[in-house]
Length: 283
Image (cartoon, rainbow, N blue to C red; front, side):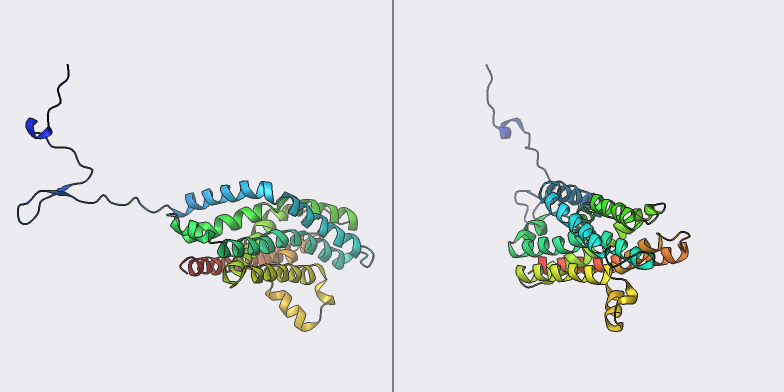
């Protein structure tokens, strides 16, 4: 038979989770509050957001990726009637390939963050112990990764359609992530800075249209002021790098310079998107 004896009778004390602190007046001891858990680190947090966004996009974005790929291939088929080959054909194929990235990474990400802000979804992320950069980088990386199949299919189809060599299509390994980072950062910033969800959708559509008109059309066919706007578009340098890779003997120094500029623009745009996230999350 088991007997129940009060703790005071046995001369023992109940264990506490924190250190015991005595009072100045000699009164009963109190327990100090336990320390909070350390804030999550950037890379593990970014990886968790990336996996969550990629699994969601795998279901919801497949039809839109098909539309983006079909749209780019359709543009190349139309341009085939007016472009015979040479530098213009290289520009059309490169611009159409990067357009797939713009459709998903810029247009859809702007809509996603605009809807997230309008529906209060940012409050959920704000309560998580993760750095703001992890949310932006994880979502941007997931949307950019989702464009890989469509971009490769578009580039291969365009090479066959215009008779371009596919020897150096491995450049896509650098073009897709760098262009994706630049366009994802721009799309996230547009969605987070837009005061209304409808305006975020409009800005995303306008950005994709700019990537279409300024990226697919050959640079020498554009008027002077429009050409300056083309130089400001983040995806331009990815398009230039991919277009140069179709040459028989590419100038790899110039290709590397275009990719370096694209990387710098990507870092800048992602930094702006992170700032926009912090600004939107505290409101």
